Amino acid sequence: MQYWLMKSEPDEVSIDDALAAPASTVAWTGVRNYQARNFMRDRMKVGDGVLFYHSSCAEPGIAGIAEVVSGAYPDPTQFDPASPYYDPKAKQEEPRWLLVDVRAMRKTRLLKIAELRAHPALSDMVILRKGNRLSITPVTQGEWDAVRELLA
DNA sequence: GCCAACGTTGGC
DNA sequence: GCCAACGTTGGC
Image (cartoon, rainbow, N blue to C red; front, side):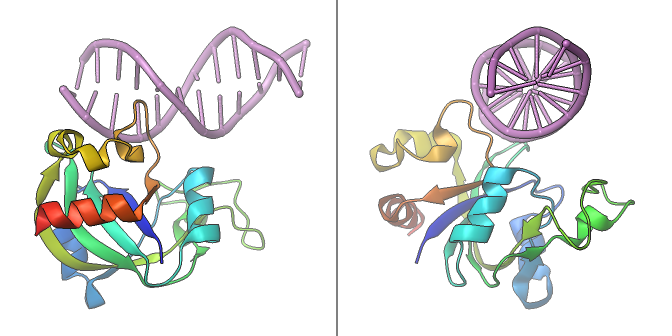
């Protein structure tokens, strides 16, 4: 069992959107970074806990709790010329980009960055490190517990 | 809109 | 395989 923080732009898929989706489940399309892809491919397991994070918006922060509900499989948007995530170099026989299905479990109060920074147990969170841009990052058991406590 | 930080690209 | 140039991310 492992924990993750996954960034989503709420303009595209917010925690509300995910909760409103069939089975509260969304395919995590659009990851175009090899490190993030490799996390999904190599380390994510069904049942892993996910902090659903809103990024690139007016109020960035943790907005909900979710879980991984599938293994990694090819992201169909890489083959779709009409998609903003289209990758002309990706081949059907040899997909470059993968995704997992994520099930939203609940919306939480918004845990803003400033609040995360203020918490000693979260000072090493990858998301808070300077220059961090990774859209999927591992979360330690201690960080997960601290976040759950803040939300309790 | 700014800009620091980082990843990717491509010429050599 | 180096590395400068470029594009993107994402908080502010």
